[in-house]
Length: 105
Image (tube, rainbow, N blue to C red; front, side):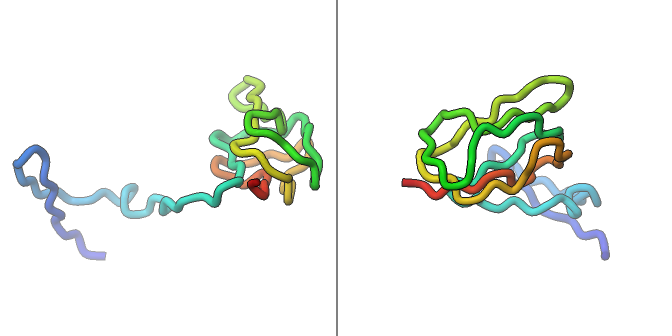
């Protein structure tokens, strides 16, 4: 792929720059569905408190994710019914991994 300059405008000043390969090859951002619970850090699933079909309230504890030697409490982002649990205890997951789907109420 050929390098080409890109224009950026910052506070009424125009700059030309080249985009880095890291920037060009970054994963594309997409808007998550309401009720998707994704990991923010890579880690290991330690304990799952929720079950499929269970009704949960916003802020209710769903699972514990160990990341960077810390126990992270993953809570429900919305109230609803748990549609699918896509991880099991002991799974090692990556950043942005979809862990749970909640059907919002």
